[in-house]
Image (cartoon, rainbow, N blue to C red):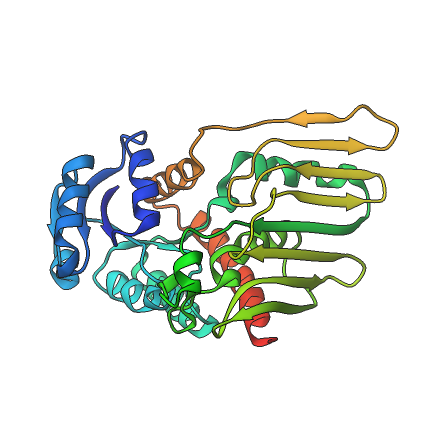
Length: 320
């Protein structure tokens, strides 16, 4: 993979260190705004990135690149992803993929027409511990309840309270707790169960944006409750309840750490399939393999999952 990083924000600074543990990924370029040139140059020097661009079209025209990673504010994903695909680049797009299903479907069609890999950077779906939860799910019998949560006091919340609105809290930029954090428990649930019968979201609103909230996914004979918060913190825990027992994971749904399978009448089993301490390692490891093998079938499977999760997110946003 000959990669161009598009953006220089918090998520970029989080992923760059772990990409060094994936030698098949070549960091060929980083692209951002002209006013961020010093920051871009600093990241390029620190992580050995080949070129710095402040013109996105010029970056996409670089023949030495085969993949772009879009790590921009949510409302920019569609525009930049479309341009990258039309330029013939494989595309990794940060979550949430797009703001609506029509945008998603258009990107998928372009990727299919051009035979390109298109994937969402959603850590949950690629974690070995999460895949192990799927394997263990039948053991707990008929499913009744899932409680998913991701609460994290935002480093930008104090500034938000002072009236300084960053993109993560700007509804016009696709900000808010649901879009930023709630998407992880939604992916967690939808990856296990598929799309629900109905979705609702009850937010706590401040300055026109949801700073925390609760989404309920109704599957008929079982329910999922997803809690997300940027205005308060708490231990994150994922609890899956069935008539024969439970699965409990004491970790945020974007990290998917070790978990316990507790079947009534049996000794609890602790399962840990952690591959790497960094939560983004396994997704980029998978993306590199997909691109190297031109795995369009695997790409299609992941896109189906992403579309179901996006459908739930869209329904949740429309419910309030």
